[in-house]
Image (cartoon, rainbow, N blue to C red; front, side, top):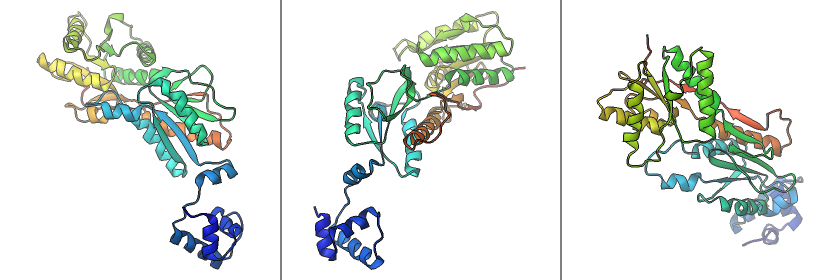
Length: 346
């Protein structure tokens, strides 16, 4: 591999002049610059990014740790909203800033995270981003003083800047829209117990309270049976019990779009059409599901791409030491996507 001394000899200049051309940190005559650049091209010289970053203390690299790559490759069908959308949002912002994003995948093993962090620190990354596969509380090893990190789709108890979805506000907005369309009995077939479910049930209750409607404990049931063989039958038993009520629900909110897709199938096996027999709403706006179902699915957006964009912008502000009044825990709101799986009630 050629060195600056080889370039200097070929261009008939001093090594210092070659260094000035490479780093562009001092004036060099145009003719001399052209001679040096021609010699670099002929010899196939590539400047050392590592050496330059050591001198400037700026690597121009951000490290990202996620499980999105290995998870995505294992999926044979849609399963919630892929956190790869978060990564895409991050990449979009960093590319515009000409910052290189280095991605390391955990392979689904949390024990690999400390090693990956240490590897990135050895590469002198200017910042770190950790992307979780779901909204959760996490605990990561301490970082060296001054090392910037952003958490996405998760948070910790150490006050690390974090970007999470506003699950409570999202479910509240969806239910309020259903109420505006005349629905007064709204069932909720939620996911298993987790932070997102807890927040969404709270949002569901707040929407009912804001509209002056009573909260019926019986209309909230867990419909997440982890794809066991009996799942369709178990879900139908819940729905059947709701429909047998003296005042049955007119719409079912599902914990995510995949669950909504499965409920479509459950209802159709019973000869019930959506939305004529009962309306269905999802959560995520997983477009490969919501837009291809018939009828198309009304759903609440899980704003993964916006979260990724916000995370990258926040990290850039921290790296550049720019003023920032954003709260440590930043909640990102999504939008309601209204489609034909819900009809208005008189």
